[in-house]
Image (cartoon, rainbow, N blue to C red; front, side, top):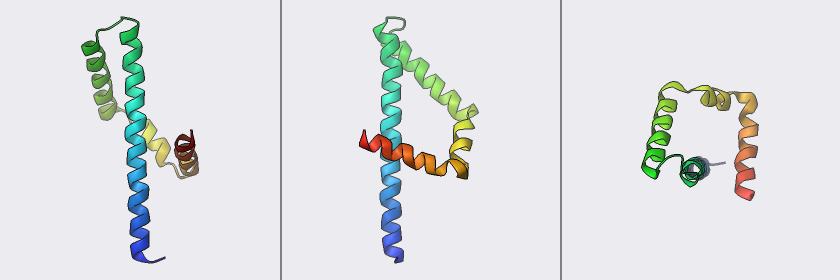
Length: 88
């Protein structure tokens, strides 16, 4: 393959991964917030504040998911999950 084709494939793959990550996080956040709002445990503003705080703390202190995904033996599983979500 030429360098140009490899670059194009890389950017297409990277773009798809970013869209998948955004959409997956978007739907996870919506599900988590809507559950507590629908059951009237928290008001919408409070639910968003709790979700944002949890995401920020996870950014600071959580690395287990990144370590697991970075493990080469689980690399093929990550691709399987990515394509599975594209199909369904």
